Amino acid sequence: MDGIMGERRTAITDAVREAVSARRWDAVVLLLEHNWSVLIAEDLPLLRDAIASLPDEVRRAQPRWEAAGAYVAHLMSSSGSAVAYRDVAPRTGADGGLLDTLTELTSRTAGRRSAGRLDEATQAARLAREALDGAPDAERVAVQYSLPHLMVQWGRSHELVGDERSALVEYTEAHDLGVITGDAVITSHAAGRIAWVHAVAGRRLPAEQWLDRIDETAPVPLRYRTGEILARALLAADVVDFAAARRHLDSLGQQAHPDSWAEQLFVRSLVARPSEVHDVLRESQQHAVSKPTALSSRGMDVGYLALSLVRVRVLERRPLRALADLTDLAPSGSGDGTRSSVMLELATAFAEAAQGDATSALRSARSVARRASARPRWCAMADLLLAVLRGEPDDRMREAAMPAVADRQLLALQVLPTRILATLGLPARELQALLALAGSREPSPTGALTPRERTVLAHLVRGETTEGIASALFVSPNTVKTQLRSIYRKLGVTRRDEAVEIARDLHLET
Image (tube, rainbow, N blue to C red; front, side, top):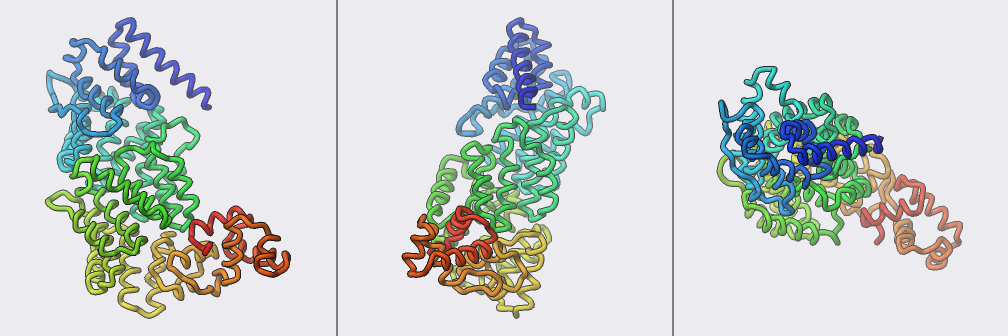
């Protein structure tokens, strides 16, 4: 399959070069329109040069190529800044057709979005959608090869401002049209964005269903798989499988889409070890300096950033610093997005609770729990925090935990007392992980390690052999083997390296 796809991509790039060389501009335009996503993924310099080669008469007749050239220049920018964009006013009527209007509006929505001007970005996306919906069917069919890429841009602007419904509409249509036109890049990209939207909202089932639609073997560049990979990492973190979550994040590396910096930071903060806290903080500060201020103070990014900062500050045991960070992040003005304000309030509640201000934490958590716009993830977290802050009876705490258990959002359960965690009927591995995150040093009746097993595990992490552990603990090797079998069973693993990985992830080695 890869060989066939590779041959197809080579044929496309060769055809573009040949058409440009022969100055067959009609053929160049058709090739660019029908293979836009392939060229973006495989040969951006060729796409840039082909657009630049179009003569003035073609640009006058089809003004979209000016905006398209600016868009490609933006993709090639290492900083991802908005400077490369031209803020081109949409032309209609005799100056250009439907595709010209849509391309120019899409350039505007992407440019304004990168500058943090989210209200203007979504307005341009809405104008583009209105222009498309109002066009005759024949015109829509004529531009169908270009539409998926444009729709993803409209959806991204809606997503970042917090308009989940509009984002899902655009992503879903982009995905379906990408399937029809054979656009594997956009099909994967759109499905990944949809999966992320559902995953971060706490809707695990639809997130997994969309991830199942993605062909992971398709030759799609990592930047266009960012949503998919982050969704997989978040779903793994939800069930306290930090090793899997980190593997997903590591596979993405430094090639994430620039638009997704705050989302990536949020997931990283969830699985960060104490030794990695400073790396997450440094990365957040670098983004704050390198990107327009509006990007870290407006829209969904402020919510992701707030939750990330609180997470790492609590790991540092500096809740007062977390509250100061949140004060600096507080959004102002209109258009901040209902979703982001819910996330900011939830972050504030956790920071206040960590600082010991139960009264203020209760007030913030109640506000989140009452918000009709809050999604399952945020509601579950707020309800659990409320149950703990109120000191409710054990049966009420278990009742509050059930939605998170049912939706497999187990990471949210770490706020519960260990006596409650041990009665929820969770698998041994997940229970052990939650007990460790909750700071438990007590053996659990349903699977926690005994003090001696923790000692054996600490020796195991240091790479000692069974005989070496036995010698250090003045017991027989058979006794150590018995203890290792018990450790493996409680951690839900079968091999030494798996036990060591979990011990390091959950800080059980000391």
